[in-house]
Image (cartoon, rainbow, N blue to C red; front, side):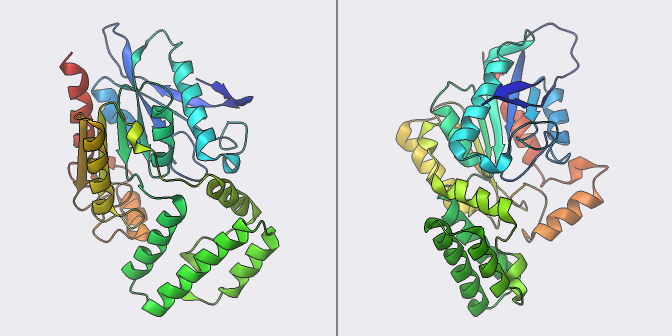
Length: 318
């Protein structure tokens, strides 16, 4: 089921449960993290689609612009543009006969933590499941990622300091409007560093993407979450600080009086809620590869049941 955003045709898929009754369906709209992603996030969403269908929820997700069958360019999307894309998708869903337009909510991970609050500030959502959401600017989150990943791999303080200096320098290059050649030269200067593949590097498309993201770099407006909210983090997340982030969410939800917010940090889980005792991305890849034919074993114990039980309870009370 496609929709149009900013003149581009966006390819999406509506995954519906097998059910004998004719009741209209609640829908979980998937909001991707950063980078190019197809509708299934390289099949990483498939188990979620199945589990949500099992409890009677449809799922809707799409290829990011310029990815898969979608038109456009994913690297030309600031958070505000991604938010209007989500709204366009929801508006399309509301025209589908089998969908309950009053029971449409969001599931989003990582960078979606900046996008979904913008959506919540513009339209009424039935619910939000927020996975590994940041509470800082994108640049501050990148500084945290560099520090934590290098520390997790036992790099020296001197190496970590040099990697942070590199990260601050590429931001300076962007802030000063310098050409890509300056960023390329900066990358060339660190080629011999062991940590060079952990920091942000890339071709001109990546540089364009960084410029777009940093142009509107703000803390996420989580005060817009007035609907039922399930916010979760993995205890071993190396990209986003789980304890500080969950505490910030709890404080803000209390301030705005959102008593329908559930906030959890999941043990033995990483940024993607994969079972991971180190948080290291290589361990995430290994886990997903080993259990690719048994996806229930990919995730940390209790992570997916937490979501399905919470979703099931939303409308049981009505």
